[in-house]
Image (tube, rainbow, N blue to C red; front, top):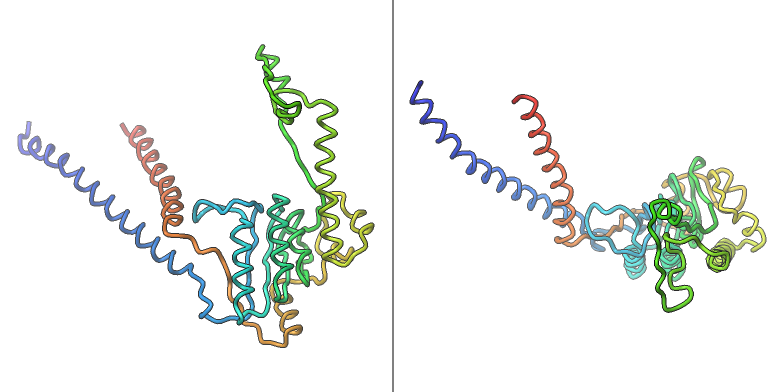
Length: 310
């Protein structure tokens, strides 16, 4: 046996922890550097100029502010802040809400819609691929709605659902022991079948929400309430059909939205995009969650490959 090779093997093994530490340090440094760049690159400044603000409303509309850089969804809290920021900026003459949303929370949708109605600026909704339900609620609150002819919009209505596990747990001899202080305290629980009375109560709430939705669209669009009610079946429409129904003012995209503003305001549009500026902590949280997945995946792949070759 070669004693020289035997002496070298322990030395090589001792080097691996140091190499791993250096690689980990370099990875963390690169992550921190990219986070700082993302933080400062994402800052929107009023001093950068622009007289037309574009505010994205993308994904499911919720009231949650979001917890990280890579969260998907449209937070009403963040969007309302951006609308108010654009409204306070004397250089901004108009606001375009870029909508690509299937809707979401009625409360969150209404919060965005009310913020748009309160602004003193010209407002335009630009529906890209989808602007349905709460997404259309937001669009209807603007002065002018532009949609692609093949986009999907409308879907005026309200939906709620729940899972009923009562039959499933009964099959496995599991019982639901009901302990409540208040007749309807466990209404909607998935562990018991909903009673006819409870179903009526739920339906009444949904009907009230639908009525509010209809009232808002009718008022926002200047339409007769009966006409909106006939459309409020939950059905969605292509942009071309929605225009014929009075839900959309113009077919097109960003260019048409800007052209409308230029004609109405008598300006040459200079667009600036308003978007939430994540905190440094938000960026780190998002980056770590995203990168940790890939790192974990890489380790797993390496172990699998090692198992194949051993």
